[in-house]
Length: 395
Image (tube, rainbow, N blue to C red; front, side, top):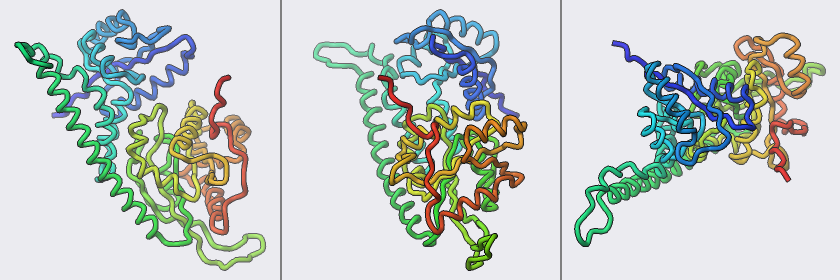
């Protein structure tokens, strides 16, 4: 018998400064995350509220209205686009009688489903433990009423919470030691790779087509239309063409190659616990000789996705400029889905980018030509685009 997916209702707070279309885009992305988790999306709701309510984040009246609607729709889960504290989740569940999940918890659940290797499972478990640790408060408050009697200090509830906290902290220490060992193993593997081959990391927003590009360049990789389909870094050897100048014929005529690594995708509000836990995996990005930033050119939120990628790269230590900056190439993938005016607009906005379509091979020759320049030396310096740079602070 086929399991019936749990129906969920999505909600996001819209403040006075938030545009309606932007919140709708966020809810559409949240719907993709929910479907990737195996949930069925019954409805999406924007909750207009000038300020965050300390206890329930959203308004109590708004939540009561959602609870009534959820009953009519047969919904058993509320999914929030905002990150909530443990006490806020508990308050919403008590007020609505429904299970509540915030964006971070939803993404962690997807990572737990996708993790296959020992390293990925350890990274996701570490992120989950660090996410759950501050949310243990109140988990055993029903036992506190058992406290009583002369000379007793505290109650069984407090004791149980402390036991849970100690167990989680112990597990966090174990996982960090295990990941430190695996990071040393990964560093040793990097040192053992063939010398002289440049190492290139594919980075970008989740589901932008990085694995499709890896397959087009190397012949390996299994693209899937899923968010966070790739958690474990996959490194393959790519053929770049012959060492021969097409105009003069000069060169050795020997084939040129590079190593291409497919990495975990980025997303808006990527939980910081995951960024920290995936430090060794993202080390492939930090230590790469060059970065190929892959973006879905047909996505309506392309520019926002690029800003998220730029911010995440800065967060993991990949500066866009300076002596340590890695060469970068922006690949605007899936341009076959665009009309000519949109392509021309993208050419104007991102003049240094390669417009490509991985399945058809469009743009691959340009990408290979750029990668070939890594063998004699890094490509010519360029001016970083706006999405790569940090936004100037106000004041």
